[in-house]
Image (cartoon, rainbow, N blue to C red; front, side, top):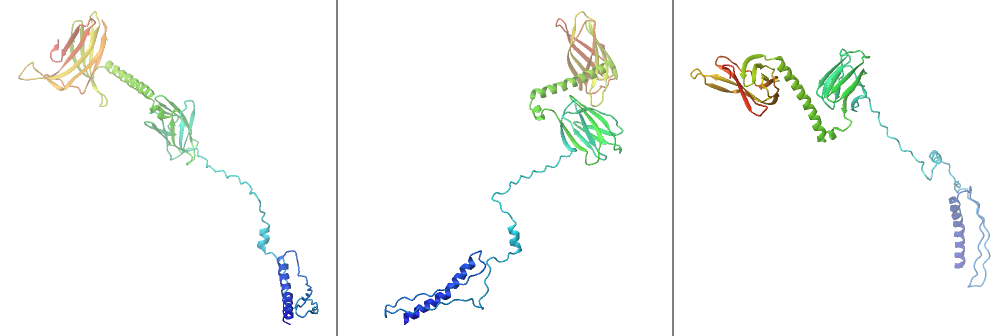
Length: 375
């Protein structure tokens, strides 16, 4: 009796659980629209080992869906708008190559600050604007500046720097400018432009870097030698002109030797930037050349108590060495630098000493005094 009850309970439990498992399997699988009805076959009861009789077969029962059961859920629910948009996105296995974005470099304006390499065969364009100034830095000091029309533009020189500024409001003002340095010539074509497009500063450099030039001692020495020679030539020309012009403060003093004589003509006053000079002219009337070695100019003061005694002024004692030969029958003029022109009167005088030698090597000195005459 107990075995039969247990077998019936298990059969009923199987009948109840089997549709639930089947329904769960159907819901998880796709492509099915509904759940088919299930027919269950009754199980045969096992033979009883106690009584030896077999139990009658159980009747077949068909399970109909209950009207109270919930409706089956479809396997494919309706899609939301976000899911529809997501399906439109195409996923690629390899991303498309993206070309690198080129860096945009802003264009450099024509005006402003520029550096140019010097080229003597090129004409440079210089852009200026009203109420603006343009500076030009040169590799050498500017010696001469020539402006085509000085009524349109103003040029000023400050050593190695030249300032250019328009002095007209005419937008079509054009002219040219040429700058000369010691070794270079730079040519410009000056034009007027709108403010903001003008050249502010143009720096010129030599074809070779300045550092290389400065590190080359031979080149530097040659350049300094050329400048010194030019300065020396200018100085010699000036002295020659002074010697030919004659004294500004005449003071005639004569000195006579054997075949050689001199005339001290006086002093030449100069401005504060140049020294004054004593001017002497020597004449060789002998038969052999005479070489001038030294000329000395001294101021003295005579005492009232001791007549004939000279008291020398240490602040008025000048001499200059020479190595100049005077040919027979020729004359030559000499300039002796002095710090000031000495005052002369009855008690104050000037003594001149000329030291030289004949062609044979014999020394010959000649003296002259403003108060005593020739010796």
